[in-house]
Each structure stands twice: as structure tokens, then as C-alpha cells.
Amino acid sequence: MNDILSTIDVIDPVPEQTDKAVAEVGSTVADRVFDQLRRAIVEGEIPAGSKLSEPVLAERFSVSRGPLREAMRRLESTNLLERRANVGARVVALSNETLLELYQVREALEGMAARLAAEQMSDEAIEDLKDLMDDHRRDVARDYWQTYFQQEGDPDFHYRIVIGSGNRRLIRILCDDLYHLARMYRCQFGMKSERARDALKEHALIVDAIAERDGELAELLMRRHVRASRRSVEQRLQTDRLTALAAAGGKPARSRPGPRIDADKPKR
Amino acid sequence: MNDILSTIDVIDPVPEQTDKAVAEVGSTVADRVFDQLRRAIVEGEIPAGSKLSEPVLAERFSVSRGPLREAMRRLESTNLLERRANVGARVVALSNETLLELYQVREALEGMAARLAAEQMSDEAIEDLKDLMDDHRRDVARDYWQTYFQQEGDPDFHYRIVIGSGNRRLIRILCDDLYHLARMYRCQFGMKSERARDALKEHALIVDAIAERDGELAELLMRRHVRASRRSVEQRLQTDRLTALAAAGGKPARSRPGPRIDADKPKR
DNA sequence: TCAATGGTAATTGTCGACAATATAAAGCAT
DNA sequence: ATGCTTTATATTGTCGACAATTACCATTGA
Image 1 (cartoon, helix red, strand yellow):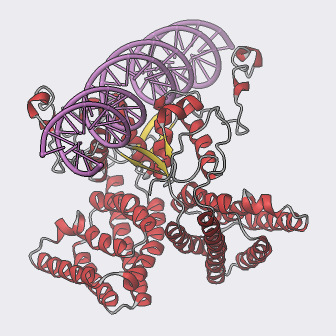
Image 2 (cartoon, rainbow over the protein chains, first blue to last red):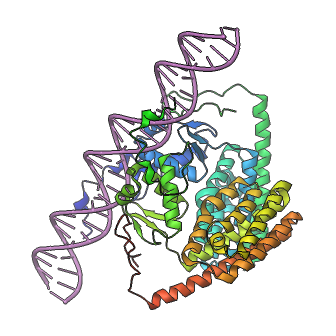
Image 3 (cartoon, rainbow over the protein chains, first blue to last red):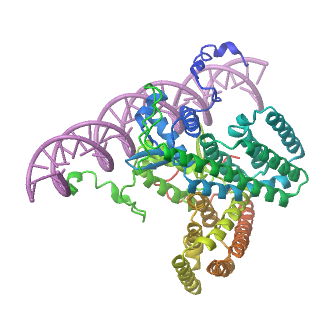
């Protein structure tokens, strides 16, 4: 049945998957370039506010413009790109206003998620959440906090709770859209180091509330946590804005002349 | 420049623009088919749960598969379509669970919108909102309530408030995504007639709270209003489910054999 | 009679080329 | 010299065709 030899001629073509994410089977080229492009935007490899040229991107990812356009459409629907007909697409600009708007929505939605999670999460899932907290505590003690809170760890915590809410629409809005944008802010503006420990404490309180099935308290704590998180990023954004303003004009060197993105100035 | 004669050979295919919205300039073909397809799905012209065939849809809208696929991607991002790679796209199934999930999110988001609107809406916008309420009152008195509450009027009210919140991300989530799905439920399951008058009263109370800049009260009333609205649709959905179960097997007549959609049974 | 396997047909995913539009530059008139 | 018109280029939008994968159906065997 599951004879490996019968598929001997199709197991080879995969290795040129240069990126770490080895795109599970059944996924299409458009999905792959979607993931790659999103990562590039979120991590700042493609600067915010820059214009995206379809031909150069297509050549960079070694695909035709068809799948690329599909990927860009999906990026647009997640609000990471803004597109105007017959003009082109730009990466969203990271401003104070959009940050405020994003975190306002997150506060309402994640508060609700925490309440629902406290009511509906399974006991095993709560135990897993506690284990995750222990891991985070260990990592913070080892000063690995940067990798976790700036990249994947913190989202992991929020992911668990949102998924624990059981509301698939809520899950989709937060995990597929808002979290990537929030991560984009954190990747590009960083986070104050003392914030990591505070955030960890807040996480612990939320987990406790959920473990005690106290939905009301969980919502309150989560809303407060999101507010604090916003304030941290906002503060960092403002200082960076000022320093950038002071050193205006000097672009910090176009990295390499090879496969790079058509990134003209944000134009305003 | 804008010589019409130069395009004399391509102005003919358009007249089957049977739809009212004549797509403003600067909009592309994909945008037009997106609007048309969304309307067809929301109003039930294409039944929920049915499979969408790209070739037949492309021929129906007289476009190539390229723009059609873009439109379908956008529909997928708004959660009106579900797509699996190499298999196809289906219209979402309208179930009790998705309804509950939708209205849970709406409750949190619209409550927040009402609070923000009470705080930030301009005085003129509030006056306009009052005028709209007067119009609605008149229409309900004339028994035109069905056209308003089942189609455009009720969304109009909610649109105003959400836009009044000033949060563009919130506006996008609600107006571009969730409202269309909510309208789909109302279009396909209707609404009990006495609900219209109750809804109108609730609207009036919300407007009053906003006019008095009482954000807290506005949020409370809006959340209650959304809950009541959900209950109404839920009730109607359940009765329809039962009657459909009673008359199982007899499909209510395939309308016309002309340009119709490949609609096989929901398959479960 | 039912299950499994093979083949066939249809649908989806991808690609390259063409057409239409917007941006930019160049030329001309004032 | 400046402003407007016109031309030219480049980018986006659209189309048709090909390739790959999937689902369906028939045949064969137990």
C-alpha cells in the first residue's frame, strides 16, 4: 500500500525549498510566496511604506505574476498592503494612529477571547498553557526573552488563549490578521527590555484567572495587558521617530545590489 | 483623449450590467465581479454551501478566470467562501455555530464602536444620524420596514455608528466583512416582523446615548441590541431548519435553466 | 455483492503575452 | 523661464493556453 518505491521519482524535487518553512503538502505556490512575502514584510526586510513592484517580486521569488498577485491580494486583505488600481501596492505605513487603532481592536477582541477561554477551555489545554508559562519563565531567567517576546513566544501565549476561546471567527481575525501586524510593530520598533518581565507577570495573572474559570477577571487582566503592551510599543515608536527625524536625509546604505526590492521613499 | 469612438468595439459587452451599481470609474473588472458575486451570495441567489465552478462563473460574468479568481480570493478573505487547494471553493454554510460566533464578535466590536462614536462623533454627524432615524420611523410607519431592515436600512444605521468611531481598522472589519455575512443571514432567513419595531426603538435609545456623549451607556445598549438581533435570526433559522427537515428530499424547483450556478448538494 | 485499483475526464494552478492605464519626461507655446 | 500639452515608458490589468492534481467511474478480483 504505502509503498515508498512507487513514489521514488517525486521525492527529490522538494530540496530547493530554501526557506525554513517547508510548506506542507497540498499547499500551492501562491501560498508559499504568501508566507515568504508576509515574513519579509513583518520582519522589516521589505521596509514599511515602500512600493512593491510585481515584476521584481516575481523574479525574486522565481514565480510568475499570477501566484504573486494572489499572494499580494491576500496580504492586502490582511491590511499589510495597500493597493490602488492601476497604480500599485505599498506596504502599510507604521504610524501612531494605526497603532492605536490596532490595539483598540485587540483590546476588545482579546478581552473577549480571555473571557471565553476561561469559560470553555479544556482542562488539558489549561495545563498546557501552564507548562508554556513555565517555559517562558525559564527563558526569561536565561535572558532569552528577546527571541520569545520579539518574535514567536509572546504570540504563542496569545494564540493559545484565542484558540481556547473556540470562536473560529475570532481566531481568524486575530491570528490571521491582527497578530501579524502587531508583530510587525514589535519587530521593527522593538520593545523595552524591562517590559518583558512585566509582560510575563501579566501573562501569569491571566493564566491564573483562566485556571480558576474567572472569565470576568481574565477579560479585565487581558485588556489591561494589551493596553500596557500598546503603551510600550508606542513609546518606542515615538523615540525612534524623533531620532530618525534628527538624522534626516541620510539613508543607511542600500544593502546589496542583488535581488532587492524597489523601495522608493514613502512619498509624503 | 476621451474619444468614445476609439472604443466603439468594446462598449457593447457591458449592457448586461443588469446590476444597479454601475461601478465607478477607476474600478477594475475584478472589483465589479467581486461586488456582483458578493451580492449574489449574500442575497441567496447562489445557495449557501454550494460549490462554485470557475469556468461557469467566468462565463456567467463574461470575464476571464483571472479577475474571477481575484474576486473569489477576496470573497474568501471575507469568509464568504471556503476554498481548498486543487479542490475548489464553496459558499459558506449557514449554521447555528457560525451565527453565534459572528454575533459574539459583533457584540464586542460594535459595543466598542458605539462607545467611541459617543466620544468622537462630530455634532453634524450626530444630527445626520437623527435624521436617518426619522426616515426609518417614517418607513416603519409605512410598512416599508422590510426593505430597510432586511436589506440596506439597518446596516445603514450600523455603518454610521461604526464609521463614527473613527477607527479605520474597526470600520474595515465590520463594514467590509462581518456586515455582509450578517446581511446574508437576514436575507436568507428573514426576520420576524415584530422585531423591526423593537429594533427601531433600540436604535433610538442608542442614538440618544450617543447624542448625550454617554459612551458607557451607548456601548451597553449596542451590545444588548446585537444580542437581541442575534436571537431573532437564530430563532428564525431554527424554525426554518425544522420545516426544511420535515420536507426533506423535495428541492424547491431549480429556478431557470439559463445562466445558473453549479450547485450540488452541500455534501454532508 | 462489495471492495480495491486502474483509467479517464474535469477542474484547478500556473505561465507567458497582450492591452489599457498612469506616471514621467520632453517639447512647445506663452 | 514657466506652464501646459503631448509623447513615451513602465507598470498594472486582463486574457487564453498549458500543466498538474483531484474526483469520478468503470472494471476486476475476492
